[in-house]
Image (cartoon, rainbow, N blue to C red; front, side, top):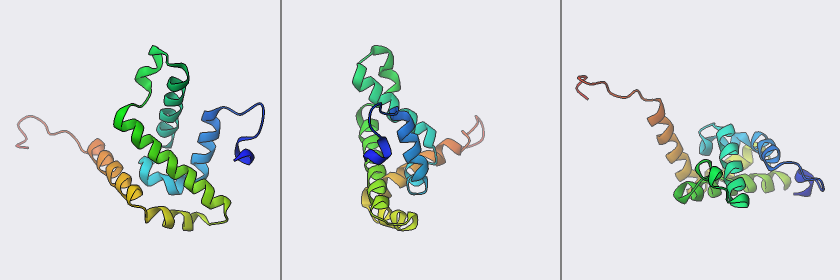
Length: 128
């Protein structure tokens, strides 16, 4: 991990996370709805709130079930990092993660959420 993070002075968390998400994007895209920047911002805002406990940061941070799913996504990123460091190819990492029930569940949740975002709302009088 030190190869990725370096030593003092440590690079900002957001920069490290963005780099890792880009490096392992193929494996993460199904669980991020291809919204890599939103994921990085969500994780960064949540970490900042946890560190500072500022009321101003509260709304930007994840809470409850959103925090739980954020942590699960971060776990898959860490797994992808470890597998890559062990010498597995990107395709092997993706295949390995896709066998995980949580990964499949999060992918299905994100696909449903993305579908709901892209579907137009029914208009009044359209019969729907």
